[in-house]
Each structure stands twice: as C-alpha cells, then as structure tokens.
Amino acid sequence: MSFTSEVKKQICDDALDDYSAKAQLCALLQMRASLHMNWQGMYLSFQVENATIAKHVFQLMKQLYQVDPRLSVLKKMQLKKNNVYRLQIYEKASFILEDLMILTDSGLHFGPPAKYTRSEKNARSYLQGCFLAGGSINDPKTTNYHCEISTHEPEMAQSIQKMMQRFYLPAKVIQRKNAYVVYLKAGDKIADFLKLCNASQALFDFEDSRIQRDFYNNLKRLDNCELANEMKALKAGHEQLRFIEILEENEKKLQISPKIRHVMEVRKKFPDASMNELCEHCYLEYGEIISKSGMKHRLSKIKELAKPFLEEENA
Image (cartoon, rainbow, N blue to C red; front, side, top):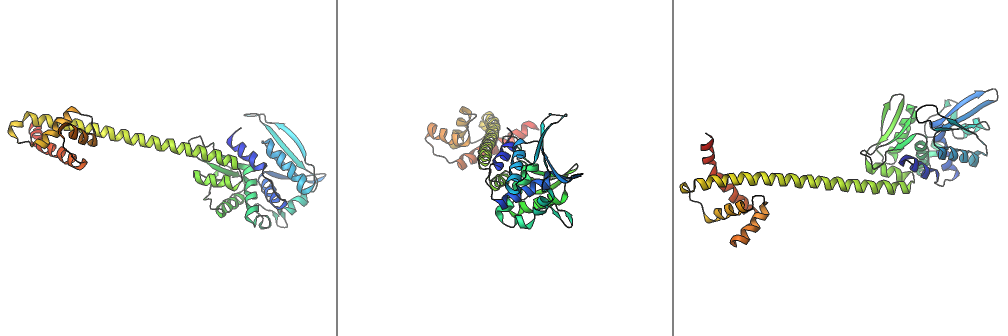
C-alpha cells in the first residue's frame, strides 16, 4: 500500500459527528461528483479508484441521508487497468446537494460553505474530504517532500489554499495542464497537515522517516566537511614539507631558532598530522607546550623564511 493510500485509509477511519461528516462529504462531492439528468430526473455520480474511499462515501450517504447508492465496479482498459468504483445516487440527489449547499439558487457552488466550515473542527473535516478526493503525498523515504490536492475548478483550488492558510499552512497554487494543484513542499508543514487530518500513524511514520533522513544527511554533510578539512590539512602539510626542504638546503645562509627547528622536525616525522596533533607531538618530543595559534605562527614563519629562496628558484 502506498503512503498516500495509508493516509487516506486513516482519514476514512476517523470518527465524525453529523456536521463534520457533512463538511467532509461536501468536499468529496465538490471534488469528484458529477450531476446528471435522465428520464427519471436528477442523479449524482461519484467515481474513484480507491475502494476504501468508495465504501466511506457509501457509508456517509447512508448515515446522513438514509439512501442506498448504486455501486458498480468498472475495469480501466488503459495503463494499469485498475478498478474504478462508481456510486450513483438517484434518491434525494437534489435534496442532498441543497442540504450541503453545493446547489443554490445561483447554480453549483465550488468552495467551502460557511455553514459547515465555520468551526475549526468542521474545517478540518472539509480539508480531509478534499484530500480524499484529490490528494497525494510523496513517500517520505523518497528524495522530495511533496503534498498536493488537485482539482479541475480554479475556484475550488483558491478555496482550499485559503483554508489551509487558515491553519498556518503556506500552500501555493499552480496550474498543471487542465488541473489546478494546491501544494506544500516543506516537510514540517506536511507533518502539520497530517496532524490536521488526524492521520496519527501516518504522521509518526512520516516524522520517523524525516528524522532518519535528516540525521543521515547531516552525518553525510559532516563527513564531507571532515574530508574537506583532511584534504586541506594534507595539502598544507605537503607545502610545509617543501618549505622545510628549502630551508635545510639553505640553512648556512640562515639563523633558524630552536623553536622553529622543533616544528620542522616534528612536521617531517608526521607529514599528515593536523595542527592539534603537531602541538601534541611537539610536547612529546621536546617537552614544549605550544598552543594551536603558536603552532600556526611558527609554520607561517617557516613559509616566510623559505619564500625568498623559492622565488629565487622560480625566477
């Protein structure tokens, strides 16, 4: 089962009172239902590929309006050839749409009715319905964090965006072919959205994967930083050995203090040692306590003494 399917299953298992159930059903019908007319009159058709969602809508219809939708299972003939679950509601279709405030005197309405989304609890249920009908979330183990809700109605997309912003979720809207997509990219905000939808287990799984991923990314970053520092130290060590070699070739022309000589000998013995390690070796070899800044100063002095001879050599 995909991560999105698991989230949707948990949303369907969430207990709802009648008002919250109507808010959720309203969103589901606005996003997925179509209105038809035949010789019998008006009827609703709701179509989805997820069996759990089809069963959930069937139960909501029975719970709220005491109707028995007609269920049919179709087989797609293209791509993955998945099953498509179609619910057709012939009884009370007009009453249901009017009660949910989808059908008004001015026509079909796309967006959250104030009556059912005024409270925070019902607004959450409405967003749950939107996600059930057109939402998806990338598996947190993949490379990118991405949560989206797709709809064909621009008014619906703007309404979903505003409602998500009501819960401090900085959703954005883009147009993708014939659809309008409301999306979140930040991992922490997607976690907040899962919390908002009461998908507790999915939230725990998402956060666990996110923590592990961030930990390994930080560990990799530290390893890369440490490797870069090691390469830098090796390069500096080889340069210093070259300077020491030049000083030894011209030592009759120079007066080199014992302290500088100590550092020269230690560097020759330990060509790959870091600055701190050089300080420690200097203490073990000569009993001389020297700080990191002191060691840096003496190595700079070696470079300074060797520089004129190096320039002369390269001339």
